Image 1 (cartoon, protein in one colour):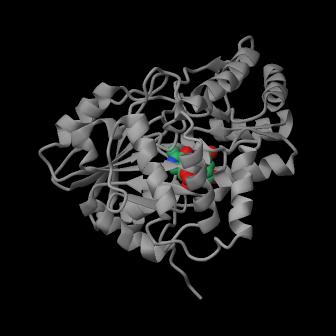
Image 2 (image 1 turned 180 degrees about the vertical axis):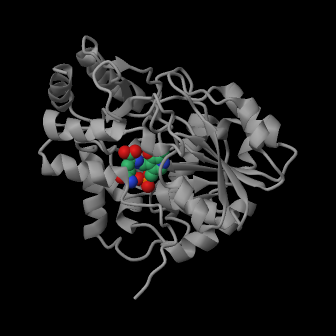
Length: 381
Ligand code: PMP
Ligand code: GLN
């Protein structure tokens, strides 16, 4: 049998690779982004109650009403934006599915999609499967700010979609309000849509998060994607959502209804009830993670790693150029095998990684003991 791959250049994701190596070498796993502590017990109880009391059949295709109502409230409270619960909110199986639906619904063969490197790994394969072509704005250390003139120069009459991500994985950078305005100024007179990946929307260490939800005009062109995996420490539940104007939502639901049809009912029920009963200030998540970030940063402060700024997400970038000349993939293999800590190399998120860059990413969504144990090992270097 011959099988011609549709994605010949795609291998196994770096997250799977590094987590497997961490298990194999019994290393502390600060690579793949997931918490090593439990979610709120009350929320877990609700899921178990939902399973035991019959919420086990297909949910409505667009999401359980209770969860969509909770999402509507969350967006109104946090951003002051009113969105239509029937026509603009779709619950998906993680943000991953929402991103895939959105790209597949909008991108046609030969359309151009602009993204910002380093870019989260699922964007490009989704664009390629749709027949689209990725164009890249390169973000450079240490601040990884977008250069808007470089962006404007990439826009052509084939540009269909722009993929943005703030707070940004893997760099931990947050965009400023002016960035959204600059983006808007370039695309406003063109038939270009935006997919804004805001899965870390509640994890930011500056006074106000920047979201497309707060930019009225941009919001009318955009799909805004989020994930309860990040907001409730439940990455394995894979409950995400996408908010988009009706005209876009109609199209992306055509994908959603055939890719998954609907998302796990008991988890939707549990999160919906929990959000409505305990409308926690979503702002609680930032101080919680800021504390973890600071524990890791202080524990590494005297080491030979240079700590880059971290304004959001639960990822910290480290520059190891004083320690080693290895490239970042080789350095991460060395760390996991010899030092006992698994990390993520940054070069894999670029089409053309900056040659001199020596950066790795650590996930600090971990208990204090895990962070301190990892830092102690890294500080020996
Ligand atoms: N986008 C970014 C930037 C992410 O970091 C992640 C996940 N970790 C996702 C999307 C996917 O989220 P989910 O697990 O809800 O599919
Ligand atoms: N988003 C997670 C990270 O950045 C990984 C999710 C996955 O393994 N696909 O680490």
